[in-house]
Image 1 (cartoon, each protein chain N blue to C red):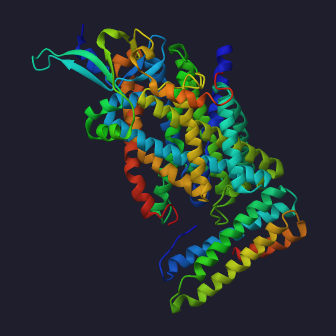
Image 2: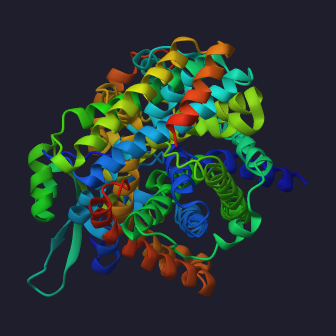
Image 3: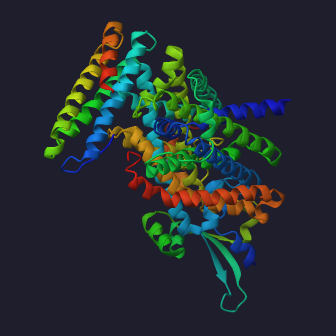
Length: 408
Length: 115
Length: 115
């Protein structure tokens, strides 16, 4: 009974924690431009993050190695360091986007000047990370992020063409601008599989002292949690498909996303949506800052973890603080956070193979994993997604250029 | 926002900027409807109306500073005028984000501009 | 007393853990003996930025940019190898984890750092 409760809590946290600013931006834009045609891409993305996270969690628990331990061990110092640098740059861009997203959400709620809210956002994140225990952070931001379910309610209330929705799960492109369509396929996959999620998940398994007994929970969290999180992505896309597509509206700001809940559900819908966005994106920002610190610490062998006190893991502590400050500095320059989001997602896609491949290798290594090494099913998915990830990583930048960042 | 930065206006970039203006108008109409029915909050309406006004303004600016070939001169003038009208209407919303009467008027205006 | 090379090469880039289970660096390189005699044995573990010079071109670049000393841990100090390389004594005894010692002075200023 207690186990079911634990699983349920973990799933709730995963749902609320699944959506970040990248998902919000890309799913909304995809729905506005292509109606339901890209729902299938979200499914592929959810499958990818489930496969990758489950493997990462299993590797972390059984071998007590988090993502970047595995990267360094498999790729060696030189190549591993390149993977680290690439991963950190992507983390930083993502963090900047999330911090910008927090400020945008606060602005839509409270109306204060943007830059002031940026400072508040960073200070609040810093304080939360400093003062709150690890599990609390995950739970609080995950649970309140569930307010995003309001988009599911709103989407249904907008009476979508369910036949059209169903056909969206079959890959097809009924568009004159194939480059833009493919750009969004890449973007949706990238948004679902942002690297920090995986770095964070694997380090989190060690933070929360999971043992092999907890691997069942690990699998359940990943599969059920992320699948339900995928429903939130569907809801965002379907909302945009109903509201924006017929009116040829191209959503450019977070306010547009808010409008998506405001129109079907009034003031309550708007407030729940904005609060959900605020907490989901805040949770993502915290996870990203941690990821940056985890990666550095794991690569160089420093002590790390929120389960350690700050003086026990001082370089790790300084690392996440520096991440937050750098993220802040990027956004405070006045660059549009939505644009930063788009670039961060595309570059994430390019960097993804560098951490995916070592994890897949370690997950198959019986010397590390013993009986917990990848079985047939895990490898079918693991290799399928390896191919998907490689194809998408190669295609991302050319598509970004040809489609003019999805503008056509 | 489309970012055509060539020195002369092409039909394609003219269309893109014109679409951007219509998009802001259509979205503004939705927002205005929410305000008219008192179904939104003041900070949200104010901030979002301002964002949409900026979008329309930027599209108009981009058109204004780009030279158009003779064939596109008339279209460009129309598009610039539409951009001005749209951003003015959205600006009115931005200045009076909880005024139902203003919102009703602006909604009608923006609906027309979005066609 | 040195250890079999296969096992030792397997621990390259692995985590070093001291007697109290604290992380104190990675195995950055290994000191091998009797390689020319065709009977290679591992004499010691090496850690620290200067050691990275032996890890390729990127390693040399990284070594040039980083500060720190080389630490040499004789193979005899290895207690066992499981998820990491466990050493028999605390990190300070080897001169490991000095980076954290330096950083600790900074972090200790912040209220609540010991919790």
